Image (cartoon, rainbow, N blue to C red; front, side, top):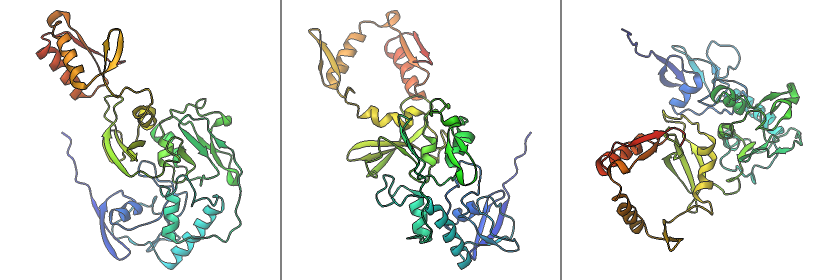
Length: 353
């Protein structure tokens, strides 16, 4: 018998506020749980702590230097300061270095108001920089049918590389070159398809800038509302947030806080819904064949016609083939309909439907 032990609670002080958190949590996680803001650009809850951007540095009593809060585990009695004058100045300088290599297009950027870089700039209070700008003059890659890669906007946070390797296991992109020449890209500058990209969009979802951005929704603006739904493409049950603007779905984004897909989706769920829902050739009304031609009809007339025709083939004349990729509820209804209504056990499923 396995005996489960209760999670140990650690007591610490952050900015003179008493905080309780679980053992093994980082300082950044503890601060966020307590509603204390610490800026960061390389951290993401789905990824291994990285400590690359250095914006989340803090002061910890009896600890030398300025450790990164995203990589520092909490200990009992730890005393932390997150917003001292020295930290403010240090973060300001670090952020200036980041912005020195970032084009000054934030006010007109297609990713405007959805960009974490803009949010951090507002929080830190950086309105202009004193450093000379560094122009990368890199090409914009459009080798994906779904998103663009503009590494002129990249801040080398490593999120896209890490999610592709750690979460998706594809390893389609990586850091190329080193030092001041470091870039994100594919091996031997191959296309994304040649490098094994799944086009799942995970890299787009974790990018804190506009370096990776959906091509379809790029210029459609921020959504007026979002609707949580279940992806219709298979029976896994991935939870998605459908972003709606002017009555149309403009983007589908996987939801992080759920136990099914945990912020991940396949290429269909991530990029195929908006196009499918509003496709010009999609049928929006039932069609009934009359005199050899398909004509539009109401749902009531279509259902009555189907019921009338199916009623002639009960018992052994009828068989139902369902899909293993449908939801459990849909497959339950399929077998219930077959057995109770059509009075037969001729039902099967195929995983490839």
